[in-house]
Image (cartoon, rainbow, N blue to C red; front, side, top):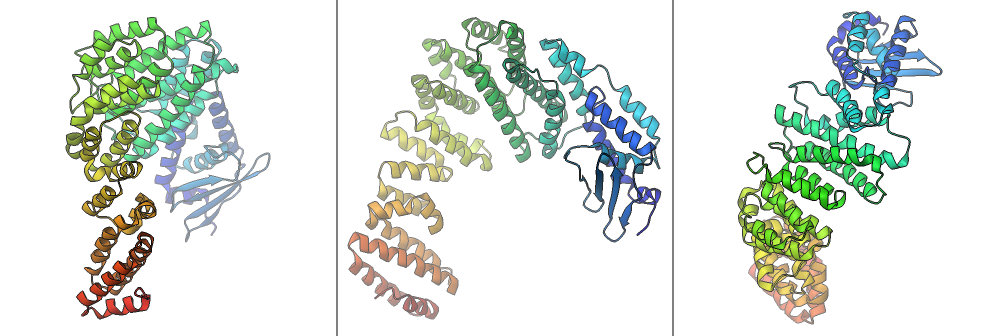
Length: 524
């Protein structure tokens, strides 16, 4: 259908304005590449380089072409609220911006829009990158962040990752060329960005427990870990010391944020102090600073943080005293400390913490944690406790504390211990399904102690019969087939035949069940 740009613009004014605002947030006037992109997009509009549009009123679909070095085709689906371009650039490109500006000019002044956008430029990122210092690197990040994160406007959890990536890309364009500086720059930028995001989250009450927020934090921590691992293997240049001092301050500031993402903040702090900051002078300085902050209000107990340094400096007496302060509210933080102690090879110190935590696990798992967090927490504990030596009584206390949320962990433990009868009893106590049992180790039980599995097959077959439908009867027959195989392995085939005859007699009035049993040839 042949419509003019003006008619299309007024028909979809809200989408066009929203898209222009989105592009504006992603483009920064202090970045030379972004400034060039806006200039070229304006040039395209002014020179009438956008060919007349093809517009489908039925499909709410617009296609435009721009004659550039090669012809670029821009498509806008107004119904699905998407805009794409045929050029290789997957982010904001000059072609997309040109078309949106072309449509926007019917209800705003493009010259005024460009003037306002350019007025936000405060300094050149290139000029800051030229003179290498922690202050200039921080100013580079702040310059982009100030423009990307607006005042008290909250950020939806699902856009956190995209916004962070856009900010990273703008700053990373000015990364030093020298290999020995690149990882340090990347780490500095990551820490500076996440600090600002976390402070903004507290200020605007962003839900940092949301699924998308957790993905964002996990991805951020993974990138930081990679940079730390790389830096820890390199010889440190004398010129980089001021940057490590600045990182020490930044990481401490993140730790001391009053609330939100406490596990992430503690993990981040631990990463630095167990892998990157190992000098005694730096450790002593940090401990002195933290001791002066005992009354600081935060959702992370600073007494727990002290244990990190007691472990690193081998202060056993202080460590024992600190672990005595463990309670239900700070146990998760102590667990994180024990994890990093194990990674560093401090087995005795981790054992001290984990054994002290044993009596506190049950109320934490069963009462304090949200139901969606419980299974993940028990898996983490299972991996940690597997690395230390426990008595049989301590093992039972641990897995008993998990309840149904540690079913998988307890199952694996019983299999490792070859305690097959207890494995069967566990899965009778917490019923599930035969497919789940196969994943949990039923085949291993049948392979090593087939006779112990027979009561379990009976239990789940009876569960199916109680549903009283032909589909459930067929499932019961499948279970009996597996039970027959286990009976053969155990040398108890006669027992199985007697068992099936008893079942037929007990349920002789269930005609559909009798038909399914007879078709299965279970008794032959």
